[in-house]
Length: 412
Image (tube, rainbow, N blue to C red; front, side):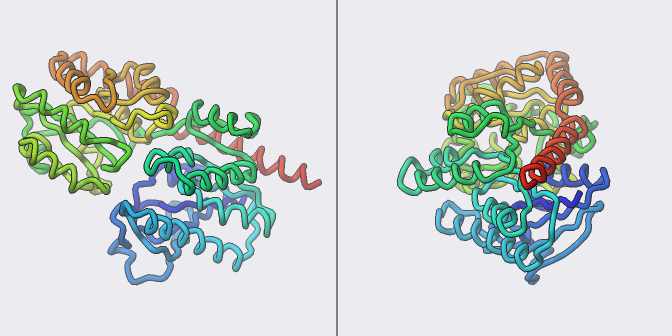
């Protein structure tokens, strides 16, 4: 089949799961094209490796990749974010309408909602059905960030239109499916396919003292690692404040891997609380070093605001944590917490509650090393059985075939 994937981000940006699906499909003899933007996320500027180019075409691991112009932004400004999203949608739409290539099916990755624009145009103008692959539920995500207002209500109205236009919808949790069904979308049109992580890329590695020193870490310390976006939804100030309860345990260190709109704010808070030597910011770690950095963790922490939306969200990062065979402190409720506890991979704490977070940190610190190792191996074993790309992408391929066939039958 000729498959086109429409996405705002794609590697070398942190969007490896999209590439993994594209690679799987290409490996099954499908012709796969990815239409995306010149890379800019999460820095808000075009990567040095791609700067000065209006567009770029390349073939990577059998996947044809077309990178198109975008107005990059990664700020708190709603207007700048909107320009970022719409510039991407416009570029992809113009390219698709100019080429008028007939694909068998399109896979549209959401967020943002604007990704649906080229998908709908492709369906209306060229007759290509599209599968909407939802990783963020809108308008709930926007409401969580900005509050309910006329703009978010309008976004909700548009989202409802998009959900009905999609030929099929794939979501990552049962909670997402329930949410859509409550909005009037037929359950037969929605499939649940969990996130996956790469058990080859994420795996336990042996580390030595020099590995710690490379990242300004002390091998004798107990490292609690958060890896991912330092954004608004993660409420990481609560995790930092939890460290104020642990001043009596000076060798517990909180380590942040990644960047985001709150990086400077979180650094400032750490200094104000007298935790500059206890909270370490590594910034964005190169892709080829991520697995090694993960192996330096004694435990990971996942934390996100406790709002209804987040109780049906399963952050992709938890699978990387678990495949690294390290235990997880789960400052999250709902579907994601169920995944961690079902796997026997960690312990829970109350999100946005520094005292509860601190207690979980201290409990993990006092847990015998053999028990920590068992929790970590349990998490990895669960994912190797239930959440690998081979298991889940096969389900995705089946949905692609069925959606394309249904569209043909309807046209007849």
